[in-house]
Length: 353
Image 1 (cartoon, rainbow, N blue to C red):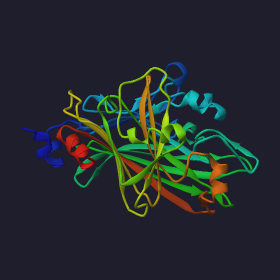
Image 2 (spheres, rainbow, N blue to C red):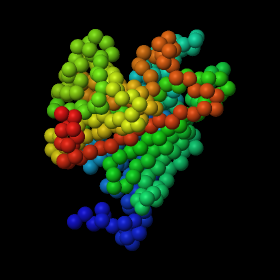
Image 3 (cartoon, helix red, strand yellow):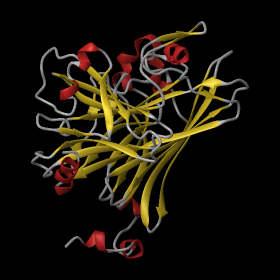
Image 4 (cartoon, rainbow, N blue to C red):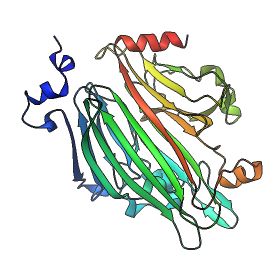
């Protein structure tokens, strides 16, 4: 009998000494190697997810666990302190984690636009958050671990963009909600590019895993990827020296209010199946990219809703697709990341058959 699930919050309070028995957020600092000094928030909820939120790395999601399994991918760099960040060497501090945010002044390839150089995937994931607040709140009769903060991407004579982020993990549900608002605090129209780089790793990505995507035309970013479009939804074992491939999923209904994409491994024995689903609003993020990297030691798939392409800011301007944020204006976007377990996973795979 699952007594916890059948008791409401007032009854649960009678059975515990403190709410932290069911949901908690704790601030800490990492203390070794290139991670030394990085502020993190450890958020945990009963019957839900456990997540390390990187306050000094864009308020992104580091390690995230469900049912004893880590679902994100961790790179070899670790969560490098932002003091070591060099814009030309973004990959040297790309820790992976379940979520790395890309932008806000560039996404994709390094780009020189109107005389200013912008590095690979921009700076936002290497900016430390301010005004960070972490707490447990009661919402609709259940507990929710909540972390919020602000990230200011600005430079003298340049942009002044403020990203307000709120992350919510409800108890009793294996899901995390990331809600963003970007405000142009400057006095001139400013480009805004944003991409949510959700990095799904083993055991979700596995030999017999499947990708279940929205209704879309799938095209390769280049000739090598185009040649493998027919394999974009399947995964094999890691291969030494394998190359990355990137696909765009061109949504058939970009004006829909919701879309989702899933990587599912129905054969994961420990949980009876495990899957990660990313959901978002295509009206805010009309483009979807998939990064497929099956190299030994880099076994990962990125699910990446965005408001832009991957060729860089100058290419967006040339194509007439560069989004501009007017002075004082704001842009809202976000993603919901859900982990499914057991019988739910087979149903997800069947829905995409």
